[in-house]
Each structure stands twice: as C-alpha cells, then as structure tokens.
Length: 274
Image 1 (cartoon, rainbow, N blue to C red):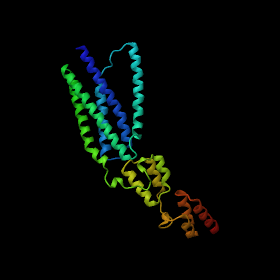
Image 2: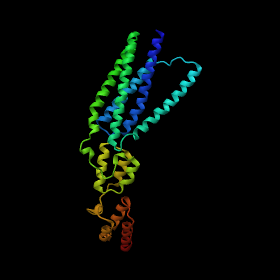
Image 3: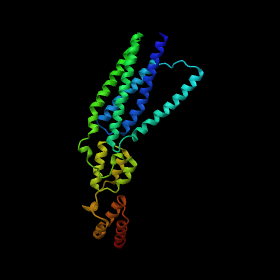
C-alpha cells in the first residue's frame, strides 16, 4: 500500500512538472502567434494549464529522500528550471524558413505534449481508483478532459496552419516580413511608399500587432509632396523641384528615404528663394 501511494505521488509530480513546463512553452508560443483562432486556443489552454498545476500542487508531495539525494534533487531541479526557461525562446527559432512553418511545428509539438499528458492522467486515475483516492481520480479525469479537448482542437486547426489561404500567402513589400523581428522591420519602414506602408500596417494590426512597428509606421504616414512622389527616382524629383515644393520635399524626404541628393537639392532651392 505504501509503495503504491509513493508511486501515485510520483505520477502526480510528473504531471505537475509537465504542466509547469507547458506554462512556459505556451507563453512563448502565444507571444509569437498572431491574433486569431490559434492564439485564442493557446490562451484558453494556458489558463487551464495554470489551473491544472495549482490542483496538482495541492495533492503532490515531495518524496522522502536522503540528504545526498536531496542535494542531487535540488541540482536537478535547478537544471530543469533552466532548461524550461530556455526552451521558450528556442521554440521561437526552430523549424522551417517561414513563419507559417514555425506555427505549424509549435502546434505539432503541442499535440505531442497533450498526448503525453492524457496518458499520464490515465495512469493517475487508474491507480487513484485502486487506492480509493477519489479526489485525485476525479482531478485526473477533469484534467484529462481538458487535454483531450485541446488535442482535438489542435488537430482541427492544423490543416489551416499547414495550408494557409491565398490571402495569407500574398507577398508583403518587405521580403520575409514574418521572419523578421520588430527592430528589423522598423529599420525598413522608412524606405516604403505610403501605399506599401499602409499594406504593412494593415498586416501587422491584423496579426502580431507589434507596438514598435505600428508606432513607427504611423509616425511615417504622411501625404507625399505630390501624387506619385514615392514612385519617382531621385533624378525626376530633383528635375521637378521648385520653391513651392522644396519645404515639403525636404520635410518628407528627411523622414523617409533620406536620399542625400534630394535633400541637398531641396536645401539649395530653399536657400535660393530666401
């Protein structure tokens, strides 16, 4: 009997460790996932996972150990925590070359984790019932139901992650946009035309909503000195430049493409008209 209780406690601790690890992993996945069905699913399961960890912690107790084993256990715990914390950022970088591929790989990993948790709760329920630990058996059933629902929802979502719609695959004016971090995108925004800038902002608002990109893009949004300005090469702008447009060209160009020849021509025009 005592050995069976010890085994049940070990199963509970295994489940608790898995749930705590999943909290970190889900948080990292949510941070990189655009707003939509997949992110909503992850956010729901993060709430469930936190609740699961709390419930398990009420029933799981630390196994008795010798002083030596206690020290070894502490070291293993520290290492385990470090690996858990490292896993989140690494998950963001793994997988194929496209952003969609990374999301798909995350979802596949989550499916594998759910299957492991379901099996763990199967074992906990069976042993708890054998030992007349009704509260623990009920806990295992409730948690397993959440994991089964999550696994079913993930599997239903995977086809849309594996085969994005045509709209999702439309190219953006910045190459490999969804593979770039916010700083890399911000550095490229000033080179875009107003039309391309609007396209990027629309995409960003509908997906990841990164604040630095949106703020910089909105700051760059302005009316060009004349229609078609953004599509003209520097030589054409300089040829057309006159005193009536020089101030607007200087202000607009200094905030956007910052072409030296255009800025110098605008300044000469302004100096000549002074």
